[in-house]
Length: 139
View 1 (spheres, helix red, strand yellow):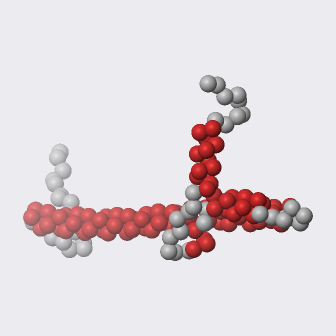
View 2 (tube, rainbow, N blue to C red):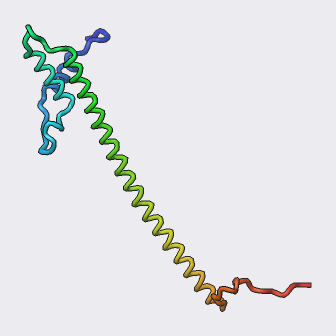
View 3 (cartoon, rainbow, N blue to C red):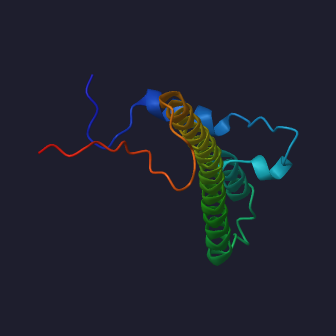
């Protein structure tokens, strides 16, 4: 069976309608704030089906509601993105602090090892000495 281009198959249409008609599960937090796009479309469809035919809903009012929903959806997406960025920055800060502490510990260990090596060779750790061994010039 072939379907003309642009015509949805019955399975796709049924699946989409089932998804739209499936009630959302509201969590204990947020209540109405956790309603999604499918819920909004379902409410919009119900309000259009149940409106008074002699006094239909004003198109401007409906467009305003759609614009408000689009704005809310964009703000929610932005908020989620900013939260993800903040989490990544927190992780980066923790990593940088750990790297700084490790570098400082390595520098202290290297200084201690250099000091121990200098003592082992019989050198002194006086500030005036450079630790260079003088050798007589060859003629």
